Structure formats: C-alpha cells, structure tokens
Image (cartoon, rainbow over all chains, first blue to last red; front, side, top):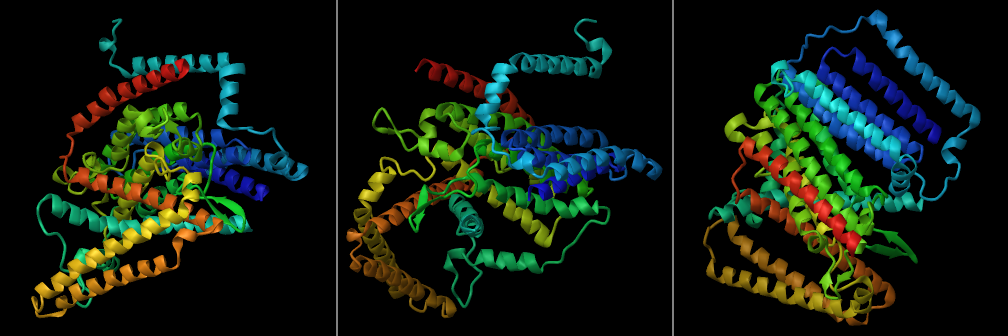
Length: 171
Length: 423
C-alpha cells in the first residue's frame, strides 16, 4: 500500500513538474505547479509528517500559488495564447530525465529495503505540531531565525528592484 | 474492516446533512429575502396542488438546471473550464471531514467518535482547504476567456489573500486557549465551565477572535457583503457568468455548501460544537429518560398546536381556490396530527424508564441535534446578513482587511498570549 502510494505521489510530482515547464500558458503552468505541490504533500504525509504535509498545502499550494496566479493574471490578462513559446519537444527529455531518475532511484531503494521506512514504529507524537515546534523553537532556533532574516532581506531586495529608481527613499 | 464501515457511515451522514441542507437553504434564502423585504416569496411551484410554502421550488430548480442546454463559450480553455466547477464543489465538501458532529456513539460496547477524520492538525487542515477554495473560482474566471469573469476571478484571489491572514490569526488565539490544533479537543474543551457558571465557549473566551473569524468566513464564502467576485452591478455575474446548466448548478450548490461549512466551523470553534451548555455528557446520560420525555411531550404539544392552526385554515378557506390547492390545509392538518400521534405513541413506550444503552444513544442524539441546530442558526445568519447589508466597495473591502482586521488579529493574539502567560 505504502509503496503504491509512493509511486503514485512521486509520479504525480514528476508529471506536475514536467507539465509546469513545458506548458505554453503561464497560468496553466501555475496550475500544474499546484498539482506538484499537493503531490509533494502526499509524500510528506507518507513519511509520518502530517504537520509538514498540511503546511505544504497551506503555504505553498495555498497562499504562495494564489499570489503567483494573481500576479500572472494581473500582468497577462484573460488571454489564452501567451507570448511564451512552447519548449522545443527535443528538449523535453532533458527536463524529464533527472526527476525521473531520482524517482526511480528512490523507488528501487524502497523496493530493495521493503517498506521498512514507512512502517517502522516511530516515537509517539513524531511529526505532530508539538514535536515540530519543539525542534523548531529549540534545537534549530538559530537556523530558523536566520532563515526569517534572509527572507526579510529578500523581500526588501525585491521591493528595491521593483520600485522605480527615483522613488527609492535613499535616492 | 469495521473502521472502513463506520467511516463510510460517518461520511454518509455528513454528506446527507450537507446535501439535505442545500435545497433547504435555497428555500430559506428566498423565503427569508421575501420576509425581510415584506413580500410573499416563491409559492407557485406545486405537485398536485401541494405547494409546501415554496418548498417545491428547489425541486423545480434542479429539474430546470439539469435539462437546460449546456452553452459553452467558443474560446474557452477546455480543460480548466471543465475542471473548475468540480474543484469548487470538491473543496467545499472536503472541510467537513474534520468537523465533529457529536461526542461518540456506542455500538456493541465500542465508542465510535463522531468525526470522519480526527487529525492532530485538524485546524490547519481547515485553513489549508479554505486556501485551496479560491482556485476553482480563479480557474473558472480565467478559463471562460471573458473580461467580466476574469475580473471576478481576480477579485476572489485578492479577497482570499487579504482575509485568510485574519482568519488564521483569529484561530491562533483559540489554539492558545485550548492548547490544541485538534478540533475534537477544542470542542471538548468548550464543554467546561468558566468561573463555575459560564460555558467556556470560544465566543466567551475569544470575543474579538470570534468577530474576526466570522467576518473572515463571510469573506471566504464570497457571501454578501463580500460578494464582489460576482458583483452583478459591475461585472454582470462575475466568475460563473459563462457557465450554464449543471456546471452553473455546481457553483450554485458550492456556495451553499460553503455556507453550511462556514456555519459548522463557527459553531464548532466558537459556540461549543455539539456541547449543550450546562448539560455535559454524564448529566445528559443520567437524565436521558427525563429529557426524552420532555422532548416528546413538547413535540406532541407543538404538532398538535400546528394541526389546530391548519384545522382553522381548513374551516376558514373551504373552497377558496376552487382547484387542487384546496387540498393543502387538509394535508397539512393530517401531517401534523399524525406527527403528534406518533410522538404521543412514543410517550406510551415509557421513555422515562430508558436503560443505560438507550441513555447513551439519547445523549448522542441530543448532542448531534444541538450541533445541527447551531449550524442551522448560523446558516440563517448568512442569509440574514445578505439581505440586510449592502455590498462593500472594493477599496472598503481592502481597507477593512488590511488596516482593521489584520492589526486587530495581531493585537488579539498578543493579548491572549500575555493573559494566558499571567493566569
């Protein structure tokens, strides 16, 4: 059962990623990316991490992709044929082979070791919100805070790049 | 095997509850609008002269939508255009999985918790599904390739981004109070008493959070005063403009499903879910016989009263229409008198002497009824607000979301955290 679910979610993820790259319309690409994110959440759920799985849907598939779609639509308008050309079919294998290779590699590893990784009994409360919170705000607090600072810097940078030059406060 | 079976039954119960409430709500919306605007409302559709105060109209509606021609715009994006209505409906239905509708049901000595999936991240699941809800609307707006539908989709996205934050912040206050993300824990915690007399309902411990949440739920369900994605006066019908027949029916049904889920969430988070105030489960079970007797007696009195009203109508309106509609009061009288007789027959079975197994069942039924009653009330609140308040202007909507609700949500969370740290 777990093996089947792994192959299902993994294949869905690779398919979603591939379609994201080869689609002509940016909006359809974004929709395929949402599909890939939801499939990734399925893999997290398989790995006994329900909290991370839900956050994957809530943050990536939900909030971030809604913003992406919003921006794409604001810029592109209700046009079906975007300006982007479709990727040359000759290049498709180049995009498809690396993720497929990873999928097959992991899949065969699972086939070799059985489903032990999925069915090994874990400490009680593993992957629960409490457990994740203890790690995040205890052992990995510094890394957590540093990442948040890095994101803040990125936001300010994006703002600086996006704004017209003469309107920046320091000019 | 047993767990599969009981889960299927729970899903079936929730499904029937929603699917039963959708036509009832469509009826309530029309009759409620008529009541608020001092009109009669729908009363023409009839089956052999029986009109049931407009309750036949939803059936006529369904038949109309099923047999209408399915008109599609020529330049649509085929896949997304067809996917959108199903996505809207699926998302609207999936939140119910984590809402508990009762405490437990004892079958063969085993306690079955009355919730489909008791996730330890249930509250986040609600938020995650709510955040996916907007995609159907956006896809519909974009794929129909029409400027008005497109504007509706864009508005829906912007609205969702603005109000989802406040919704999350409001719920975080609740999580701090009840110290759990599991919805069954939150509902169970609301069964306690505060200072010995006040039910510890969410609305009592988190009044500001409740206000923020209810406003955010209205915004997320795209109901008036937040129905800008379908603002008729500006963008014709918004995102579902190009849909017809059953595809439109799915959008229509999804709106009412969202209302039921919104009402269920408000009830579960802030009004104690299935809890009856001052009557915790042990008290319910101990007094099950008494409660059942009172309930049946009240049913007898109520039904008999309605039957008498119908009897007077029969006498007063004899031959009023001169057609099949004259049967209506007679049938009404027979129905209510029959119900009264049924309840009276139930009283003859000596409900006050109910055994422990029966007491357990009675307690469960009372709790489920309490939950359904709360859901019905809040669903009515959605209708009530829709016909009372005018629609927001777009800038007002954004100002409310970002400049009022977001700071209030942060302040509420901070105050809650400080108070909890001190107490």
